[in-house]
Image (cartoon, rainbow, N blue to C red; front, side):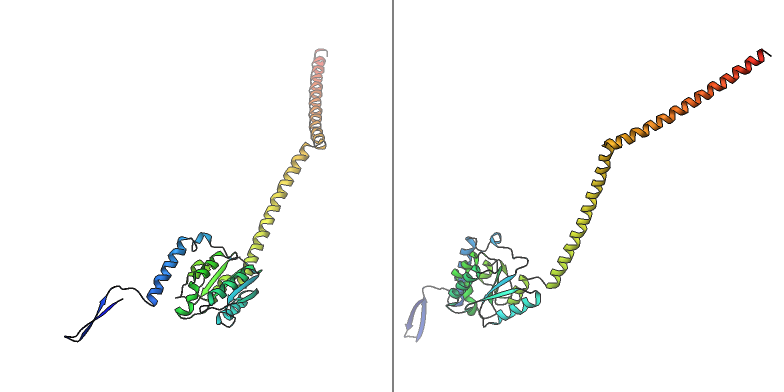
Length: 269
């Protein structure tokens, strides 16, 4: 801002500057930076408040324009990865009415029976994507009950909605990849878990069987029948020992008697 001054002597025009401020894109960047700082202080971008994505979503809500390439890219990518139901919540994705339209669609998606929301659009100019920096829309993204993946523009684009979402994807296709694992990997993971459970159960059952056998043996050793059998064995052993002892004694006595007889015979020929 300033005033013009004209000097007729030399025919010159001068601008007397009174103040300097950014204009156009520069002014928009300043406004955007201030808004980002404000929302960051409120904790809208904190990682602690971000929700984890469901491991195996059965239904995914897609919030974007029905006529845009992003919707078809997301659907095709999901179809290749794993069978999953999808539902579209159509919304404007550029222009002055886009924030209000997107907020309405997000509300409907959040109230639906979907497990996860994918939200965004394909690439475009900064003006086209500027609606995703709308303060009310950013607050809506941060307040949703369902986990949300944002996919706005391309890798070089980063909006405030991306910062507020639970997971940020560089493209709509990338968002679909983040939403679902590949079918082969899921099947492989299930097979691995089945093998682990089978091995664990087999080891667990074997361990319990060994304990049962041990306890059965221990219990049987205390049973009356086992005690009787043990004592009978002991009695048999005692009986055998006694028989052996008596036979041995009788044999010794017989030998002594024979010895005495011989001696007597010798004395009385």
